[in-house]
Image 1: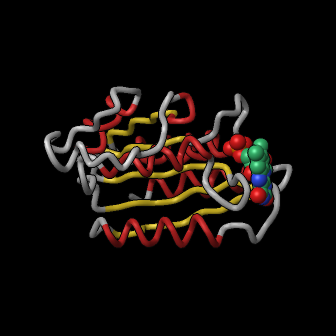
Image 2 (image 1 turned 180 degrees about the horizontal axis):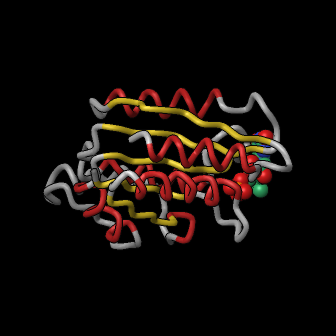
Length: 170
Ligand SMILES: Cc1cc2nc3c(=O)[nH]c(=O)nc-3n(C[C@H](O)[C@H](O)[C@H](O)COP(=O)(O)O)c2cc1C
């Protein structure tokens, strides 16, 4: 399978990036083709709702920004892991902008999705989990797992092993 990981943390020593990397290691060990894109480094704004894409644009977005790098990957991936820190009970702003930009080409090809959320506190996941489940269902795809991690020491051997095993189980 072609596995695409979208990392939404702008932090250098990010928990979610390290946990997603453990997932990638497991998936590679199981023979999958894994690519990671750090969307937190993207210069993107959210969808402008101009409808260029669905009128004259033929599914292409009018905004010629870093999303152009991601669109071909969204068209090819079989499975997508969305990895994000929790910011104010939601996805990071960068991840949220990227998700709204899925609008131009329409539903991504991937039929499997997973979610990884990292937060300071427990019990802060309802908003992004509900949003994720809704768009995965709208895409006609399957949710294969939701992993949440919180607190000051998230990069434990146990958590990293859990993510590696998850990747290897694909
Ligand atoms: C702008 C901002 C907003 C945050 N909002 C929340 C929040 O609402 N709830 C929470 O538990 N943690 C919150 N946090 C803490 C992060 O979610 C937490 O440090 C997380 O582990 C960061 O993930 P990362 O290391 O992958 O960047 C916030 C951090 C920042 C910088």
